[in-house]
Image (cartoon, rainbow, N blue to C red; front, side, top):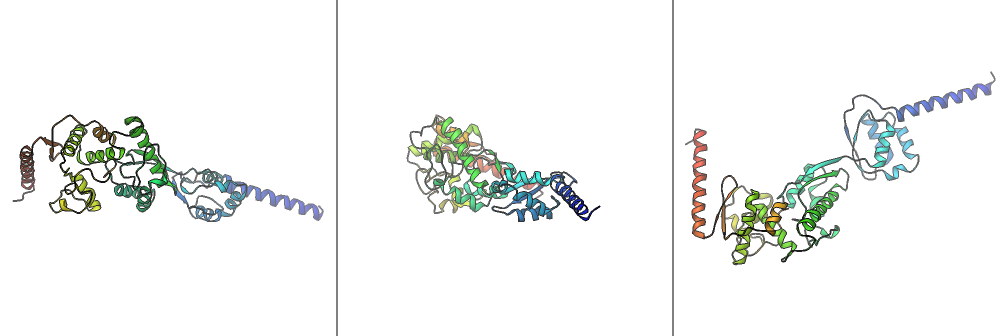
Length: 346
């Protein structure tokens, strides 16, 4: 065979071997267990950095081949930052296409009723959706968000509807969650409960009142009664003297039981010191509390005191209230004495 022929055959062999290698490293999975690996792509990450990390984690065979495939076409320009669920039984090309499509992981996150913004921020950080500071900064900037209802000027406290949300894990997760919560408020409260119109007072006053009901009532059946007490006191010019507002003023330093010194804390939210509603909501109320604020019970009560089980005794007069308080304290003391006896204490 002539030298030229041998050179051509050798070149063809090299091409075939290279094509075979290229096919294997890109289209044949590394193999092994199909156990999920969480892989994070940073904002603006280059194919070189992503390929190196994928190779280091054993998810692809060749970082060089992955970079070459990423450079082919303009798919990488559409790549999305965020968290991906990858497996060793995915080929390098399947991984590349997933990143280019932005198939980031979505997680179900439940935000319970009655959380203040700082508590919701702590939950968001615990769920690894973003930092607490990022959440609080966004929630303190209502003008950055759109809504079909009148947004407050300074804070979204009370307007982030508590529910369960499916949130994509990417750098914009915090803002996505806030948008979802506002959209849910728009649907459940503004459109369904209010029919797209502000109440006779104002939406802000309604949500503020509902947040007090949320903070005070544990049983759904009692929420309209708690709302009635608060509204009756407002009509008579009485201070609300609502423990939940003091707890809000205490913030992360809130207590299981308030002391008399706590009731004197200097805060515009302290309804033991200041008459009327506080300046704004103290948590995100659920639908039951909002409905109670809209439709309070027709009851003459002006006072209530909580039992140990979270239910309340409602009273019309101060003397009735004092007797109720004495009864609750006696029951609490009897319960504590029983606990000490069971533990063998004095």
